[in-house]
Image (cartoon, rainbow, N blue to C red; front, side):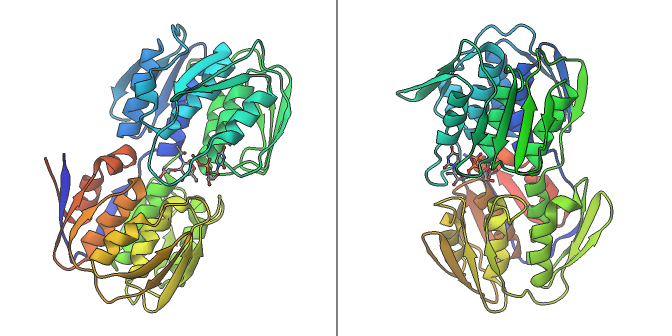
Length: 418
Ligand code: EPZ
């Protein structure tokens, strides 16, 4: 078991380089199974979720090779298996993308029921409704799900909720289907657009990614021998933007996309931070007090739920009272118990939390309850008085590449202890 030991009272300053997007990578890697050829992916985040999915692709007969720290070459010409190991796939959420990609390519798939961070109920009924609309038969048995079809035929699918996973899964399942698929009320996150761009590079016919409706004309085959670079991580960018604000620091965030950050930028400005758009870099700094504000999480382009715990840390030391309404996940306020141990005054009930700003946080033993809560607690420990020990850091390694090195370069005193 590893932990971080973090000495606080640090104002973060300097430069940080953003990695490729986790939530794009964990979808594009399964998407390579649709391609009868070799794909080179660049700007791949070197994180534990990506390593798990590489192992799963290998177990299905793909040849997966890291050619440098951020580049993967995947040869999916000779798949040998469509039933993924239940043990491997149940370890993390994005294994559900194997359903769409293997159903699309082989018309037959079985995976373990997807695991992942504990954020409350995480149904996949919209994915299943979509696969069935394309003609698949989907069955659940204990701990596993399988789907098969004689052929997949394009259809119109309206999603009852806006779902990142269902949107991507139905894109994956329909790019090789016969005829046209129209997906309505879809998610519009940057990683949706990235998956569509990747598949288009390989010969798919997809229109409308990034809008409410996506139209896919099925093609016979996706071709290999392409190189694709994964989009910069919107959530990692936001994590460092909030770290600059909360530590009243000054950070130049490099290799990121300013336009993906509109909603967070608006909130940081309201809270007294300052932002400069420098092309593919963003400078965020704060030289005064932090103001309170209210936030409601929403699908993109609304405020991302995956940045809610991080901004919660800044609100915990803001002047005045703030309210966060979490509209995506049931259990995303578990981090507030940890912040309260540090002296924060937060009352969380159901999907609402009230933050009464305090002057300082105090170092404490802390437990990451999920990936983004873990990132938020690092920020909290960096700004707190005294020393904190942060446990359960395997959650953080799932989605942030070398996070302690990145924070250390900004002046944080953070050590990983075995
Ligand atoms: C993706 O999860 C992300 N994970 C999550 O990031 C992120 O929090 C979430 O999207 C929302 O942005 C990956 O991309 C791997 P959803 P996903 O389907 O696809 C309900 C992180 O920290 N819903 O968009 O599982 C669901 O319960 C992680 O990086 C249904 O009701 O989320 C939720 O309330 C954690 N039925 C809402 O929709 C369904 O069939 C949005 O979920 C599917 C979802």
